[in-house]
Length: 107
Image 1 (tube, rainbow, N blue to C red):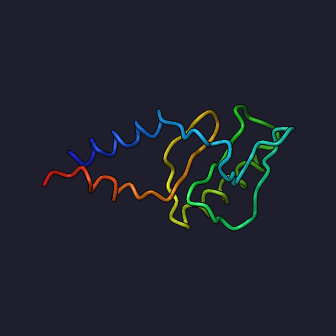
Image 2: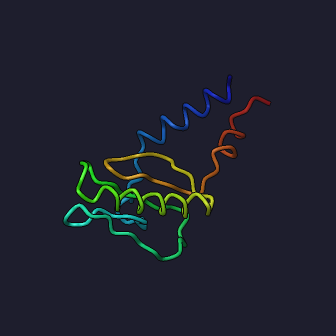
Image 3: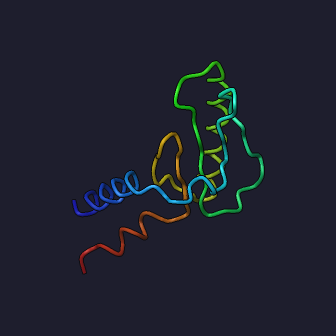
């Protein structure tokens, strides 16, 4: 039960504490001028990345599905985890939630 509460606390914290430099982090997918996805095919070299999505459904919805699926797959395969969602942006980093929870387990 404590582990479930700790996970909920971590998720709640992640949802409310946006990284201050989220704009400067590498974006695996960005929203283009015409609401099209702009996919970054470069290898992931950062421990923090962002996957941006449009705030409204667009005519490019099939391209968005492909771009975000590919971006999430690449990020998750490299050990990144979703830490939060802020104003149309998923924030992922290499922090391991299990390691964070280990520090709050009772002795």
